[in-house]
Image 1 (tube, one colour):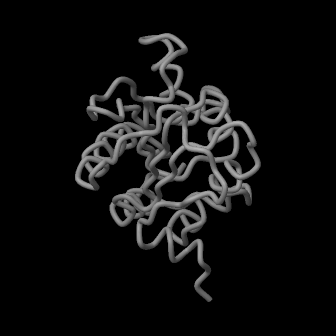
Image 2: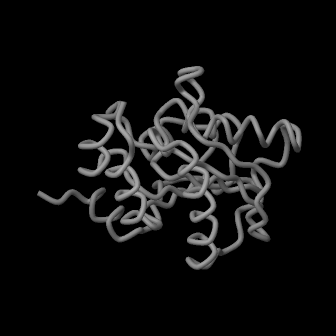
Image 3: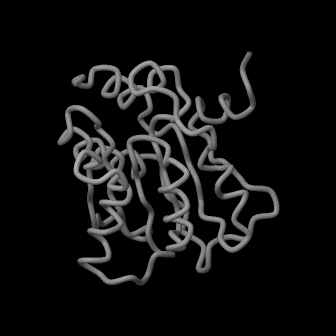
Length: 182
């Protein structure tokens, strides 16, 4: 059975949250080519961890300029998912400001911890490649916490960033399927 969510993600569609207020200073329209270019940078980060290729980059929404990067380091600390490492890199380089003007690109749909951190920061947008619920990820890394990034956004009354899934999903699905195993 194909769910509405699966269909939207499979098409790489923008997930719209009903009644959502746009992020302060709403993001400019961004062509898919630029989303793919930024996602390739996140994939490059992910390839730095052959076992858990969760990579992320933050770019300026207006220009596409990369400003931070990170890759999963959960073996050192269980909270160091790629998105968190990337957020820490951003704060180290730029301070804890201007989040609304940034987009985080990640090789996999953010888990509830990472999505909540992005909401608290008030990130302008989140773009992911593979769905955490895709058969490729579930067979490779196991079942995730059963809360999608969209559901975390829906639960937050204070901020509604842009959310886009499925960008270069086939490429990242293969990366996760072919990852090294311990």
